[in-house]
Image 1 (cartoon, one colour):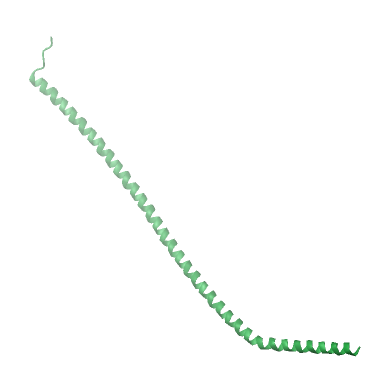
Image 2: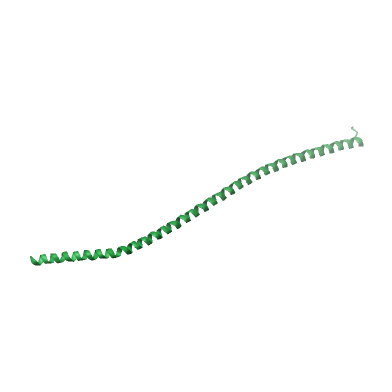
Length: 129
């Protein structure tokens, strides 16, 4: 039959076991903290990457918006110039039409006179036959 350990032997075994358990808990805690630091570093890198991408897109969008606004301003100025040109051409055409109207009226009158003269000549020629 085996004799139980003496009190100091039992205390030594419990002490060794406690040191072992505490060492194991410390080792696990260190592993967890190392992993947490690693994940934090990865998260920081990822957030920096995403932030850089966002800043890049925001800059591009702002530049594109500025180009679009400038292009629209140019289109508006061009349309305004075209409108002015069309209005000037319209005014010139109206003035031209007004200056032609008396001449066209005179030409129509002359043509009617000739037509009437030719009709009278034919009528005379037909009546003399």
